[in-house]
Image 1: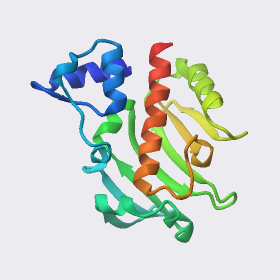
Image 2: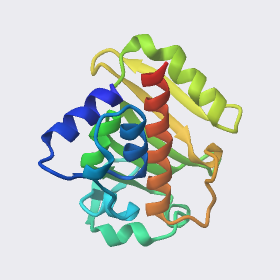
Image 3: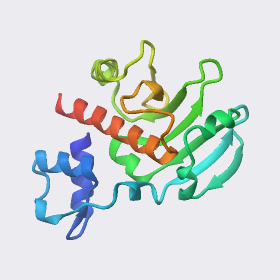
Length: 192
């Protein structure tokens, strides 16, 4: 899956290929592209073209559409605005089989949660669970349910249990951490 999506992206690029560190490492490891054709953009630029919404948790109504600069807020913004969640769509999410990622604060536990749909076949359940169990630090750090209607996995992750997560992160850094986490999940499944 990851190999196929990355190869398609490389083939559609004319001349040089813009690859962020995760994609670059994977592409070189699997000999998908010549190293001389790779251009490595600044990490934070991955999210410059993101579509971002602040929404009301109870009704899912749009509060405001935000620019990239909104991601410079600390993740603690969500603790101060517990009635909101952040919805983010990104073209690069296609690479890892995700349409969008929402982040909110859990009303009961006060933890930060990421919610997304993961485009992987149902047969990969054990590989997904093994990666999550091995990588996440908490007891019940995730909920995983296959949605047969949409043909994807509904995945909720407690961000507090992702290694390197802490409350001093900006929203941008939290989304970068989520992307990296999901990229390595796909890489693990792809290489299994």
